[in-house]
Length: 205
Length: 107
Image 1 (cartoon, chains in turn cyan, green):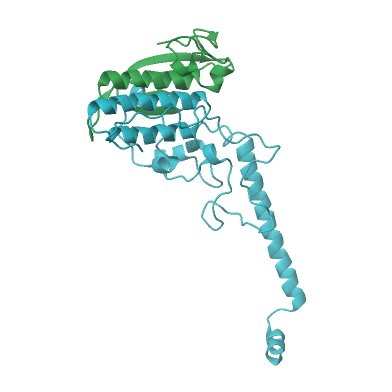
Image 2 (tube, chains in turn purple, red):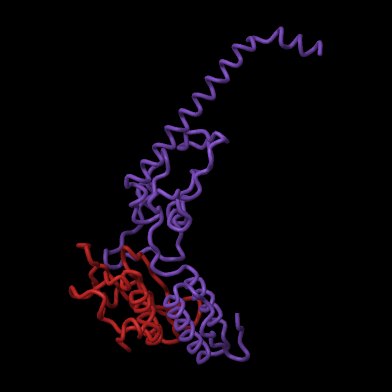
């Protein structure tokens, strides 16, 4: 008790000064957060991110679009326009440009951590995290035309087919895998039908 | 990879055509068989590598896959996907068996 009183007596500021300083700091943090939040919302709602044609076009606060990041990297040997591939389902934006954002699959998310360059605003704990769209927000994800689970099923089926014991079995299995992809798309993502053809002595999954 | 065949499609209300492509089948490096990729441009931005034991099978399966993606799309369901200005009908390629009820254009 004596020690505490002593510490308070020798503190460089009074309790009133301390409270005033804390209030100022909290106020500054909240202002910075509100400003950052507004910028994020504006970039999302006004077009930059909402209309980003791919995840590569999503701009994180204080950052630059992934395309610009990619442009700043050493140039790859160019290919003709007709030969340039579209983004593949297996290639993630992270692989392409080192940008961690999955808006097209997971919706709008809070930028990862305060304190990282490019993410200037702190995260007051009393604010709810921005993890999903609110009821009045426009959808932030692009429309996906093919259910993801169909692609996953096809990938697994292809893997099973490649491990069949002979070419005839592989061929029939691959045809069957495509049949399953068709039906999965037709049934809006219902997987597992029809059964995948496999050779009796080959792997089934 | 070389573009083997290409199909421009119309999207209602859009000036840019939707490009659907099948690339030339290629022999697989790591295993026996062939692989054939098909791609559908924006707004689908979709591509898939389809395996086959022969180049012919890979190509045929890729065509089936492409057909499924197009005829199975919500754009087609909504009658917004078309070919030569005709929407919700024949898209210039046959429809896979699973889609015969909505697109009666068999292989």
